[in-house]
Structure formats: C-alpha cells, structure tokens
Length: 339
Image (cartoon, rainbow, N blue to C red; front, top):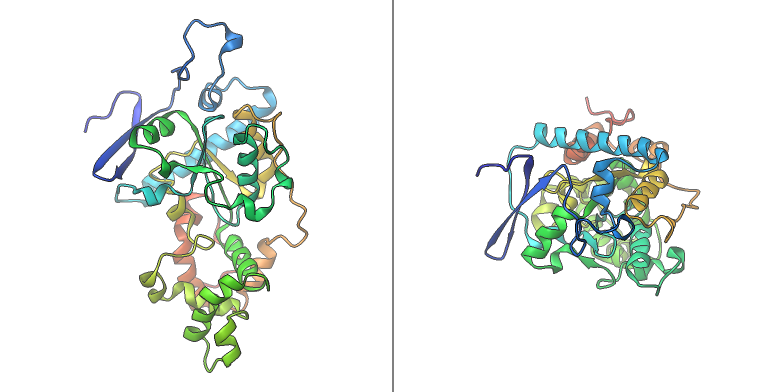
C-alpha cells in the first residue's frame, strides 16, 4: 500500500470481517466536526491534538511539551528497533482504551499506574455535572464496567475517526516497581479474597512444596518468590492471559500499533497529568488528585522484594518484561543479578 504524503501508517485493526487502516498525520490542521473555517476565533474549540502539535500554548507548558515529545520519539524509535511483525488488533485489544468524546481524549489505562484516579477524573469530565470531585467517587465505582466508554464499543468508522483526531495518552511505570505494587496490593491485603481464591490457591498448589490444607483452601499467604515462579512458569500463559494487574503494558495498550501522543510517567505523575488536562482544555474543570500514600512502592522497596529472588528467576522475569523497559526508556534495575 502506498503511504499518503505527510502521513504514516500506524494501525491496522480487524473488527469482525473488516480491515481498518488508519493513517496518522503529524500536522493537525483539520478543524473539529461542526466548526466552520472562517468562524470567529472565540467560537473555535481547538482539539487537544491541534494544541499539542501547533505548540502555541503558554510558556510554562512548553517544557512539558518538549518532554512529552521526547518520550514519543523514544517510544517510536524503540518500536522500530525492537518489533518485527505487524499484526491486526481485535476488539478485545481496545478494551483498555477509555474514550472521552467531550474533550477528545483516549486514555489507555494501566493498573497500578494511577488508573483509579484517572478513571475518576474521566468520570468527572464525562458526567455533565453529576460528579465534580474525583476523590468523592469511591474507588470500586471508578472500576465499574459501563461507567466509562471504551473504544471497543464503537463502530469501525467511529474508531477510525477518534484515533485520527483525539489525543491518545498513556501513563507508564518502572515495570518491576509496578509488579511489586501489584503483588503487595493483591496478595498481602486481607480484603482481596477473590484474588487469593482465584490465583493464590493455584500458585500455592503449584509452587509450594507440602502446602498446609488451610493455605490450599484460602490462598492468602502467597510469597513474592512463589508469585515470580508463577509468572515465569510456561504453563501460566498457556492456561489463560495474564491478569491485567501484572500484564505487560505493551500487551495492554499496544504502543507500537497505536500512536500515543502523550506518554506520561508515574514518576512524574502530577506535572504530566496537569499537562494532559491543560491540552484537553479541562485544567479549570478538574484537578488530578495528589497521592497521600506514605508506603508507595519505589525502587528501594522493589530491591528488597527482589533480594530473595534467585538470579535464574530474575533473568527470566526481566526477559518477560524486557519490552516495557525498552519501549518506555527504563534502565535495568541495579539490584538485579542476572549475569
């Protein structure tokens, strides 16, 4: 297929029997639907993509824009260097992409990367006044299916239109810090009985020698080394896909097939979130919640968890998450003993 001048083929999506080919243009000059050329400037609502690529925001945003542009460039180069095969995306692949039609946003949510707060913010932005304070929305309500629309719910033409014209953003995190955070949340908290039953009992049965009957029944005392053994066991992914809390980001959000305009990072969460809201014209509507956690999983904590993981399993686990390290420009942790 001949590529249009000034454009780039970045996504081929197969929905049902239809092959959808989307071209992405770096220069966004087309006005939003319903906005006529020649209208008075005060009546034109600029799309987030127009704001981002035309680069005429206030000076305090320019530094953020340069940083975001650099991350996009790193991601694009990493995709070119480390991916060989193109594939089509199914509707299942689009279920993590949340759509805000009001502000022309598409957000791919990644568990354990502030996704609860981002869902709360998007519920405020899309609610037409029903919600005003993100922190007033209970965490479990933010995750209820149906409260926010995903890209998979739209028709092929509607998907194409949104991918072309909406600001697509993602937030990522150092892969092993995210993994330790997922383990701590799902296997060391007494209230996560559903995870204990579904995954904990299986992990203990498979990877613990001579387990106690109570552990086999409750699955509520999985150790981190047992969790790592479960992840790298070839049987695990043969049986079912990874749970989204420890699935690799590149498998959840497909950043080498979908061209994300903004790659935010958990390590710079607040300024990156502010930049996204400013680009969307929503900075005065909602404020991204600041974290009050005093026990946030960081590199030092991850190092303590990995201290009891053998070099053999460290290497297998790193190879499993290697693409996330490469695509999002995270260095190999110094605490790893993989040689």
